[in-house]
Amino acid sequence: MAEIISDYFSPGWRERAVECPCGWSGASRGMRMELQETVTDYACAQCDATLLIVAHPDLDLVRRAAAAGNEEARMQLEIVEEAHRHFGPSESAPD
Ligand SMILES: [Zn+2]
Image (cartoon, rainbow, N blue to C red):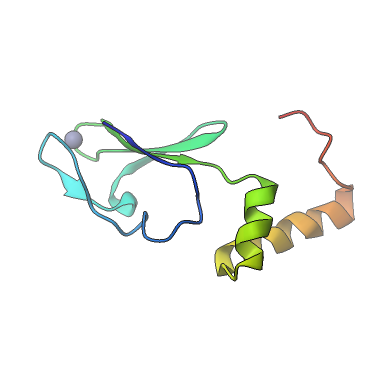
């Protein structure tokens, strides 16, 4: 059964080894990654069962994580703000 990671910036999920019922076990980098619209699925490298479902962070989550000192969030926020300067805010864009 897949584990859902609702907070992208929560520490440890990338490095944590997950055991698949088929006997394979490993961390996210060893899994098959599939980008969906609102989440990224990580599937077993051996049998393709979905092991992790990671929700994409929304801007609010990125801002809060950046404020809390998360380095990756800070960099993402910089990219978003840079894009806003060039193309204008995209808050009103449809999801
Ligand atoms: Zn498996």
